[in-house]
Length: 630
Image (cartoon, rainbow, N blue to C red; front, side, top):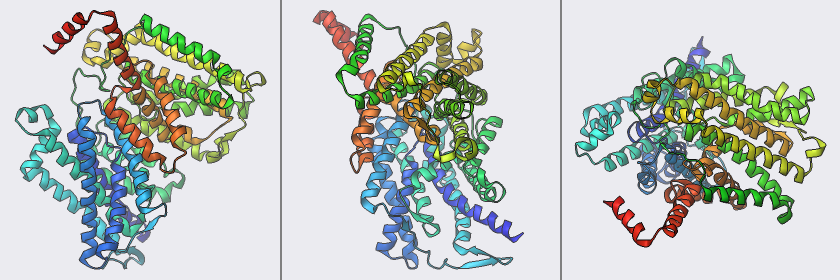
């Protein structure tokens, strides 16, 4: 009995640090609607700053606690810089641009922390006066854990007073409910958003600092806590502080007791919980439904048009270049282009879901890796011929998408995105832990194509035919009646339902089709590399697809290919530098700020203006500009 009581108390202690970090994320999203993926970096910085300040100020008595508060303020200053320099320019942009910008911040902070504190894990100092243990029915319990248990409710009470008994807090709550009305009342939203972001950053930093005596500081803390924070915020309800507290307690206790009951399931227990809660209660425990409107859920209302004559000539030139490429370059560059073709098909499948369907998936790698594993398992255990495995792999990925999509399309917005992430993480865990079948982290090896396609040149042309064919098939679906109906559900669910479109069925079919095409890309990948590992189904791979789509431009049909090429080139070029994450992060942030429509979108915009000016007399061009300005 005492063991279970101590486990219960340990879970409550873990919940306090998790709640501090997650409450800041919930506050930021509730007001600014920014899905801040850099929040885990603020948590990590809190630990590193706390370690440094404790050493400088002194770890004895009140100096220790002053150092932790100083660390929270330091992280708040970092959040202030991020908000002023990056996010303030993106508040009116679709949420995904903010997400990618904060992903760039993650990479920047990782290498800055590596430069400042080194690669070694730092052992946290002991809290003065709380270094001993107490025995509960004979079982030892750290005193510091008991202090953490008290800290969580105290912070919750302080936040409640702040948001319910101060003018600033009331304005923040009002902005959470209706930002437009708050602006109409004359409130300076820029200052309000800045204050909220700094407060959320400070809470994350404080959460990282107070866990120092229980562990320390290391460079993996950001991604280690990020998934848990998002699960807490989504389960509790986006923007609900009390919901975040309840979810933090629930998830921490689930993880604590899950180790005793189901040790192999600790990687996915919280994601299973999130999936169940979102299916039963789509807005989380205490969340409110997102405001219904006519705006596309993904934030994009792109009027996609069939290719014009100039675009057709450009595509023909690109295809001609790809056909003669083996004559112009060596084997290394052919392999590089094969990687680009595979990633282009993968990114195009996600682009279809986002731009045409208005559905943003954070777990699209489940189908990419699902197709790869389907092909590998067929070859390994059923001795399936290469050609048949390549054909069946997208069917397997499509079946997986059908099961996952049946639950996911019931939700919308960020809840849809997070549910796809939960299911993708469950799929990754199955592949990672089912060692008897998938060989676990060692992966499946020796998955090569037939003799006729085993050479680099032969496989290059095969990949070219399949990838280009898949991309053109997706494009054909976009301009088919189904595609127009899907865009109708994206732009206005109310009007689409009024004219008789079955919205959920339309979205489910689109989800399955996108999953199948991602599975085809995964099958090409496994045969090009001869192996597959669980990483191909992981969260970072899903973010790679999002990054490629947004780098190329979600409002351009050629964006995924351009984004895949840019992503592959940047990764291969920058990875040779010691601080390649810093360079890549700065590049991502610069691209998002300078080219919010993506590389392909920017090229299309400026080239279109140039061709228009070339085709029109100067006076006519000026007249049209004057009309637009008027």
